[in-house]
Image (tube, rainbow, N blue to C red):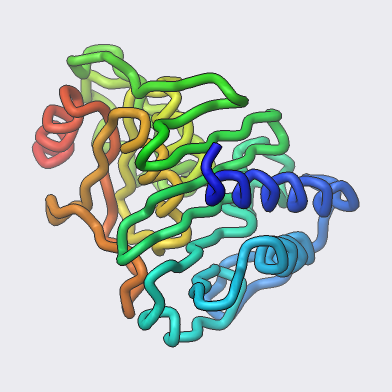
Length: 256
């Protein structure tokens, strides 16, 4: 394990220990200014990860930290979502995770996603490939959409935004955290995923690295490849899957 991945693993373990005082499904929350929920756990995990990860000369971008644009001048930047899937965490649905990515000159080079509820730790780097609980993983080798398992945003499904895919050849599976969805795709636990609404860099940076390290591809809706640590952290949505399946998935989505 290279030094960056070791730091990520240590941070995930520290975060998992810090979570021990909280019970998913039985935790108070409040609304942030944008309307998204936040809990004491989100704030504590942000502080814990920052303490373990951040070193002099590195930048920090996190959902739970006020953005310091000095990060734009840094070569190495941590892009973190301390608790992705807060709604699921509050409801006690085991589809939330801790997400960490390290970007260098805009490109994710190492990442880790921990799902404490399922006991899964996904780690990956651009040099070493990706692992799940220490075992090497690859994206699904499925080459066609018939029966493909495509992970959908649970919130988008609840709002009815996926009804237009009712007759599509793939199976739609609702799931919470987008970071966790991308991690599942990296391990071949699902064949692909896409989002219908914009996402922030901290939502997807770690998952993007894991999918690519496991042999998959991720593109934005505009069909471009994302450079991270941007002044505007929003992506216009993304598609993820194997190199063989992804073009077919994008074509099918655009038909609907």
